[in-house]
Image (cartoon, rainbow, N blue to C red; front, side):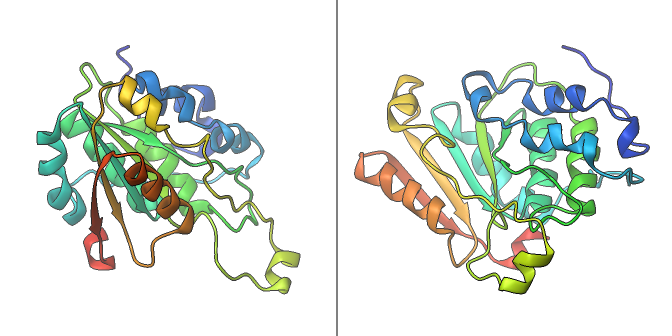
Length: 224
């Protein structure tokens, strides 16, 4: 699939099915983890002007990119950071290293949603349109949104906003059996502190089932 890199205009000028396919292209056995919820809900979102994506290298990419590049297909990365940092990293991983990012973003997007917002949507669209097709996948990285839910939300906020928060369950990340079937023997888990409880539970599950797990704690300055 050789789709040209398009320059963003406004949100409603985009073919949302095409945008989803650009993000999902190359996901192979992990395509089932690509939720369409973000993309389907875009057609109901108010039109916004889209900014150009920032495609220069980032501190985070320079920090973890080399280790992911050398890891090979027997390795899986799990990166739990804010969605906007994750989408920029995802674009760099795919375009520069042929490492396929798997966006694990599950919520419908809403103008008053607790998760998302105009900047989130801008990045989902502009980085998606900037993706180069993956010809030969050299690895996979699951990109999670560390702002997918809040530990505390006031009653007033819940009354005034659309609650599109979500947690990751057993069906949202690959099982140990699936990883074994794909000959993936090692997982690297990158996250901020405090670690999100659902991701921590998944990491613990991997370790309890004898999957080699390497854990890396990121700082906010690493996201620059």
